[in-house]
Figure 1: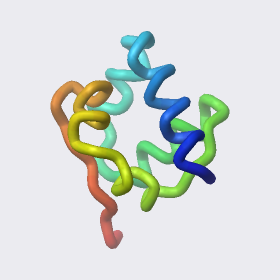
Figure 2: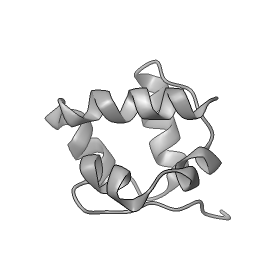
Figure 3: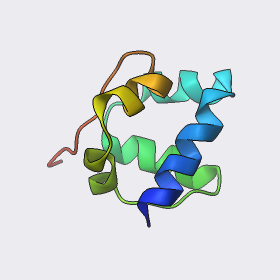
Length: 70
């Protein structure tokens, strides 16, 4: 559940248009965590708040996810 896992997942997403589409359809940070887990990367939603907006935009098609309280 580390920041390194999150960064590894984001690196994978950069080269995978299918993953990019899944992330674009995600409604919450928890959805993103679930997608990442399906692909072998485990981290918590709060780790996403540790990334810069530029890092997130690089793989999210311009969307920026922040931790939700749902």
